[in-house]
Image (cartoon, rainbow, N blue to C red; front, side):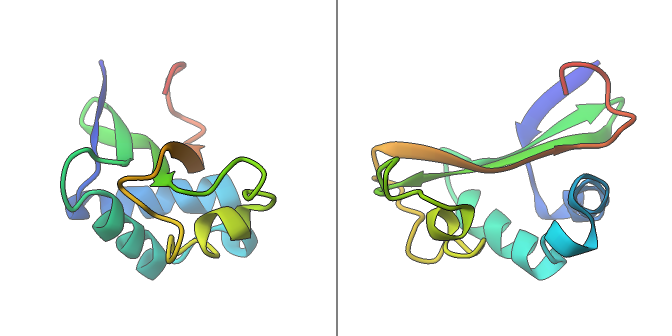
Length: 112
């Protein structure tokens, strides 16, 4: 059964497998960057870093951020995400939500 829940630090090995498979060496984020995103996004509710589990194994993840940036200001991924760090772009009181990444393992069930 597929379960969606907030990501936590214990998920990081599986999150990094997803990052590698989905985006590879050239486009994938480092573990340090993913740890930073987790700390920024899931320090308190509402959470913005989510995982999908299939039989207690993380098979997909999604990272979003609330932001003050408008759609026009999000002209590139780098601009919209502060080069992936969310520095200067993450704003809990921001009126907009930007999904920075969505990845899944090839073995993930449909819907993940």
